[in-house]
Length: 429
Image (cartoon, rainbow, N blue to C red; front, side, top):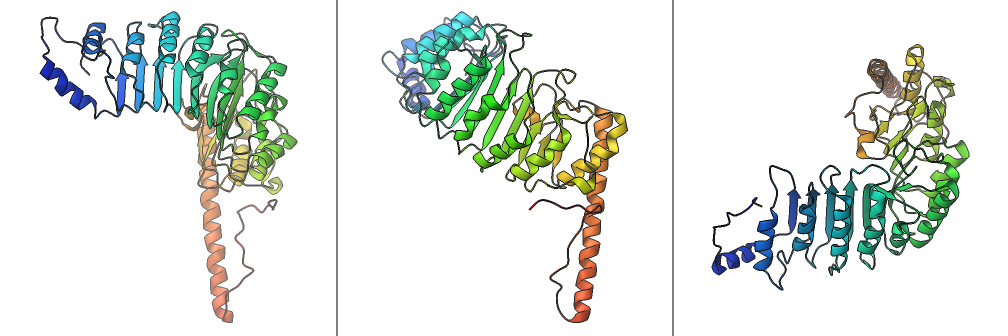
């Protein structure tokens, strides 16, 4: 879409009819608002005047809007249509007054959107500011009976804003993402109990717990507080994080495995610096491997300073894992070899190891966008892991070839031949 028309340009009725003919074909509208490319208020007014009583984009199904100034908040409602199914709003904090966003959401709440299934809203406001949006968001989503996915990335959900209560009115909700701030341990657990009871069909959740203001930590997030989610048996993607985190115990991990048999993605994150929150003991990785066999992507901060099992002590290995995100795990230089051997035993050759800073719950947890927390040390560990896996594969091929040769000599295949790793160990069945 262009920036504007010169004030002296006359658009005839025939031209508008041509515009309307093309507008009927539009299914997806993407607007990346910036100082270089934006839709002026003047142009929007001319479009509105030419469509009195009509929908500008009558067959629009998806709208993706980046808001960088106050004027852009008025424009979203103009292009929304009753046919809309997906709306995504990225709101910058440096150019958009939070009160203007509130007004925009209230305006959108008056629109009939009978097909709306997905709402995605992300903000960059610091904690304590976009908590003001809670009430407006609650009004916007109220009575949206078709809603199945609500992603509120970096949007703070407060106990008194009514937003989580509004979300609990959608019994068919499949996806929910949000950052719960200002909750105590008791109120956080209570909120999740209400959510699990009201939305049993949830398949993906991303929920955090933190203090009301940036730099002010909330209470430590514990397993007991997220325990109510175990009632949502269809969960496949779970991402939970806190300002600080109490690492899950073996029994907690077992219960997760029993409750979520379809789980393929799990992120357990902490906003605290590694010096404040070292993470879960590295040996706990075996419990995740044993109790969560369906995992394909897993991210968690691990403490590599405690006991690290030797190869003979490793009792479980991931069956389907493809990415292990180590977040900001730190490792002492004296333990590189033992960490590499342990990870090589627990993770197969297909596993990619990543580490990113401040990923918490996002896809960045599975990327190397910010590099390793300790580039030199972790780079050496990864090289050792690859070398161990190459040796394992070579040994397995050698044993397999020898078994086939012996089977040919006696006239039949061997059924008891096994392929052992370089270092022998027993896995739990």
